[in-house]
Length: 100
Length: 100
Image 1 (cartoon, rainbow over the protein chains, first blue to last red):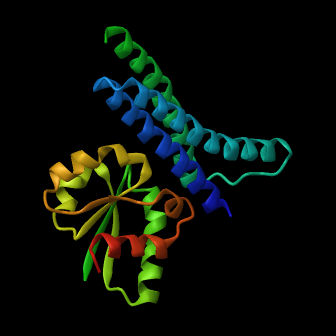
Image 2 (image 1 turned 60 degrees about the vertical axis):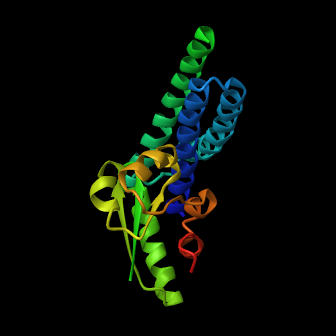
């Protein structure tokens, strides 16, 4: 079911993004232990999206056409966005730690 | 008639959940109106709601939405229910938050 695959991508990528931002907030308040724990949690959640994504890509490489509608594009945006926010969250938390 | 407002980044992925919630509510005989909006419109659409539900991707904005819609209960949609688009589970969550 394509709808379920899309939601799987959105929910995990979206949640990882939220957790990454919460990690930055924890670091802002000086709680770096919690910030690190949240980053790890975000990583684990993002990995779930990646697994779905890998499966989709492999399908396509194997000649199984994956239907791409607006919702799928939207899900891809979520994934991309989560990855960017994660990368930046790591950098921002590092900077905050150095300045602490 | 309960006014349930769903908020996510663009109101797109939650739109899928809206239909599932409507189906579940109709089945359970629960009178409600369910609508999805982008989180940027929280102030305009949230203040007439009985409850505001947030998608996992905007979970980190809970405090902001609570500030923009004082007195309106704001809850984060259960991640698993969101991912599997389990309308019944989300309606149950609404009832629980509203103490019904």
